[in-house]
Length: 78
Image (cartoon, rainbow, N blue to C red):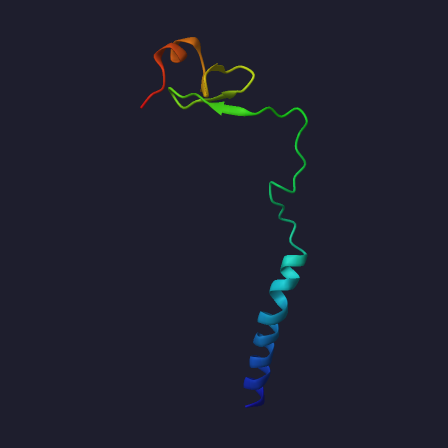
């Protein structure tokens, strides 16, 4: 009977104190916590084919970005 009570106490202590300890020692960082690379560039999706291109290399027509002149002329893909 005493063994059963000790096991119960041990399990209760583990459930009570283990999650906060694991959370405190966790090294997982979220993307918001990570510093932004100063050389990183924004990317946009081509409205015709869906390929991502650098914003500085994309061709814009209004709000829509395109990966090349042929896709800009073809227009958005439905």
